[in-house]
Length: 98
Image (cartoon, rainbow, N blue to C red; front, side):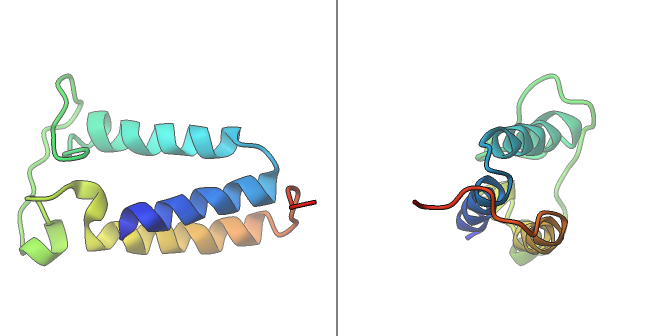
């Protein structure tokens, strides 16, 4: 579910900014923060060389450690908040179908 939400959010960023680089940079920053800063599993695997040594504790519905971090319930909430904030920051459509 979170993968679909982030996909639609990145479509929104393309439509509002008119440039694909905002979406590329955001995705790169998201993955870097997830993998190297917080050391949570990205697509189910933890990468070597991370800054923090995180471990997931709590109920499975919240962490979903057996799947992947990006599918957790909290990710969808964060993406929803990002959607609202981005839509307010960039209200004008700069890329549209012709």
